[in-house]
Length: 189
Image (cartoon, rainbow, N blue to C red; front, side, top):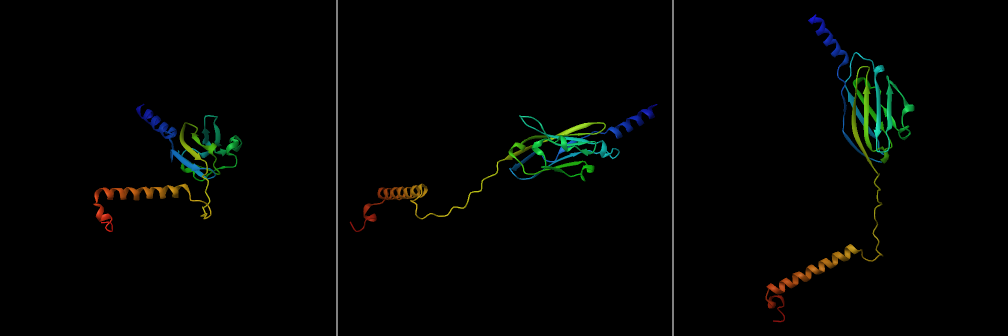
């Protein structure tokens, strides 16, 4: 009797195992129009087929959740993808067997910022992992300045001139206070 109970416990732990889902990075920073790869890892069971694997990834924002990627029993379901991500998300099918989900998101938008949650489900269990993506507006690249010789001096150059003039006056007044006048003006003495 004890042997059958132990055998049952061992077989149950082999079949059901614990599904763990992790993100390779908890936070991503990118700029508008760039591309990014979001990656999750999960434990695999050699005894189960990828056909029993379902994955559901979404962007959670204050407005509403948006479906980023959906895999149902090993088959991608593109029609469930939110319009916001249509044509901009690709995934690596070859690394799925290794327990890795890589989603390549192209032409990022600031509206892609938020919390990304990815649920991984097998026949026996489910778990999820989440990461944060912050997409900032593209920086405007200023054109190089060309010197303009016909314009009056810029305020910075006038301020610098005034600053230098005041320093010279201050130095002269200190010299007059601490040095005898015949050293400063020998021709008058």
